Amino acid sequence: MTGTATTAVGIDIGGTGIKGALVDLSQGKLLTDRIKVPTPKGAEPDDVLKAVTEVLEKLEVTDADVPLGVAFPAIVKNGRTLSAANVADTWIGFEAEAFFEKGLGRQIHFANDADVAGVAEMRYGAAKDRDGLVLLTTLGTGIGTAMIYKGVLVPNSELGHLHRPGHKKDFEHYAAYSAMEREELEWDAWAERLQQYYSHLEFLFTPDLFVVGGGVSKHADKFLPLLDLETEIVPAVHRNNAGIIGAAALALAGEDSGVSVGEGEDLAGTTAR
Image 1: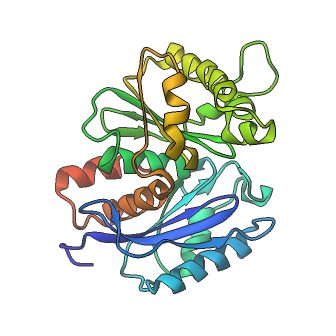
Image 2: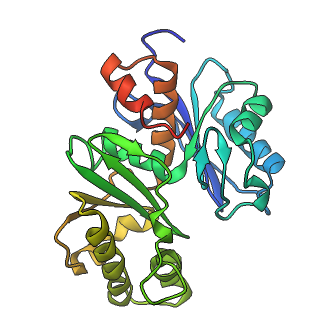
């Protein structure tokens, strides 16, 4: 890598699809078409590795000199996955970062998918230049969260798993977008559930800003105006590309290339290592 590099590859591994692109990190934009392949049935490590390799080959960026960041739907600490959301239980307690590095023959930066989406919105999106506490939530199959305080990510917040007072099931089961689809809820009925969730977050954390991501954020006008909160709440800018962009941003910061010292230090501080 040269000191002037401003590009990196981001790979976003999800329960249904694995997406990737080459990213221009001076602007936070994709330089290539987004490549997507299905997540292998069962999502065992070896099969997921093959799918990630396929994405890199289609992108024609298998060169190990190009920084690579990988976002994964699990709690990630010191390169180990400590949970498994919509992937095989084999990932629990698994040395995932070392596994990918060996299998791909290159260094990577490996982090939780909601956390890297938070990094993307902090660097290039709805949370840019915002002070105080920002809570990003991704509404999809589950509820992912990223907690950012004064530009620094507090990793693995997992606030979708907060339990609803007086109920056995957590908020993720009750208020994720999948619950709306599963129970065939109208927008207003789903918004009532979101109201309970965001009011609970508001009570616990008193944030300065909520950012709502995930694919459903493209329909933000159908449910965000129905919420009554003290905290400002806005849709994410990068939606389903946030994982790709955030993973690439963390990879480039890890290489300490193409960003100023201050930016590099801030981004490096957002890792889940």
